[in-house]
Figure 1 (cartoon, rainbow, N blue to C red):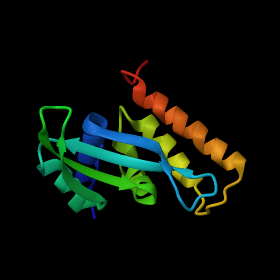
Figure 2 (figure 1 turned 90 degrees about the vertical axis):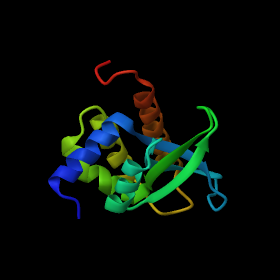
Figure 3 (figure 1 turned 135 degrees about the vertical axis):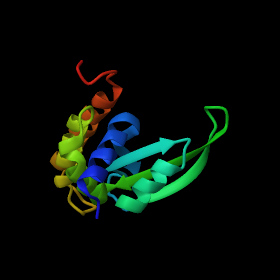
Figure 4 (figure 1 turned 30 degrees about the horizontal axis):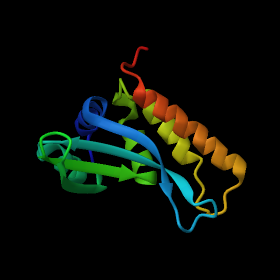
Length: 144
């Protein structure tokens, strides 16, 4: 269980190096062929922080070659869906730059239903939240 210091530190990492996103994914079992998914991710050249996040909060940890930046080895930690929501709820009081992102992500995941045949209105609501998250992630600063 993470203590207050760990939660504040994790929030700082997310504010500075993290990404909170809602992605549209292909889904073979979904009637319309896609679904939206929440992901929280941190990628770094240093292994220490992503590995600590994985050990402290779960999720997945992997390494990969970043072909776009000198073919350097990168380390990535990520959480998806409910795990991501639960993590964001824990660090929310400590977030500064990505607080709005986290609140939107929590709202998005809270509205998710585990069904393959979603009503069109629910899919449209998920798309609105995904579009808003995309807009938040494209802003250059938190005060714009």
